[in-house]
Length: 311
Image (cartoon, rainbow, N blue to C red; front, side, top):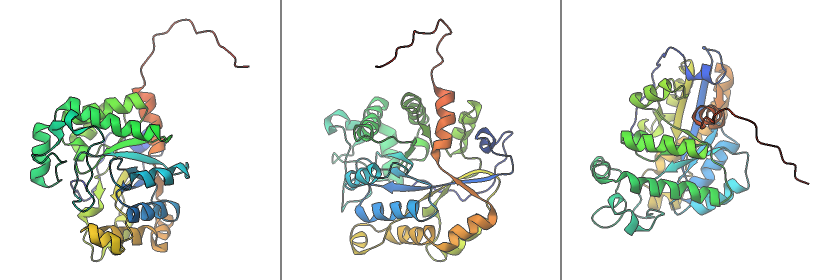
């Protein structure tokens, strides 16, 4: 659940779709399932939305109770692209999670009760007002390394409930980590997009859609219209599918948002509209390649090292 903006077209001098090798009038869409790993009914819906529905990728919340199951699901599905949903807040008192790093090492990330802040406006403001960048880095690295230790290879980094990290220095840190680990970053607020474009890095050309911004009533019709009205260039939707079963309803007040997302993503209607409108659904692997090439350290020219051959 990030801060929400309803999509409208933005026309930069060179669209990210062109940086990715597409024509200027191509309509590209990333449909990314956020919150993978939150709990089992989310995990099941995310996998189905990617394998059967129109979703193209997902983002894993490493500290969450369902993350271990989610990583096992990904391990059996190397074809499913996924990012890391960097997580510094917790909105689920019924299934709470904390930082991966020992709490005594990241006190600035915790509230007065010693827990992660809730992503209310006040909670986010308090977190961002006191979080030390070195402690944010410790936690982000722990989440990225936990995925690597599980033998998984992500495509990108994005943020749970903190648009573009919530602070310029947090976004800068995340871009630096992406360069180190060979990943892309989801950047969607205009200041961040402008900064990335100046570096030749592809980001969404059009305003970002968070599915929490849409009314539950009539959502399928709204999604259908958004697809028909999709502008040229690269767009991204952050969707939040969940089964909405009894377990979900017991712990998650947002289950209707998740259930209605899931129903549209796996519907025949969604796939039919994509075909009718000639919309190309892509994932972050394409973007990751450009980011990795652009951010990789430039080595000074010199004599080539001798080749060795394993025997």
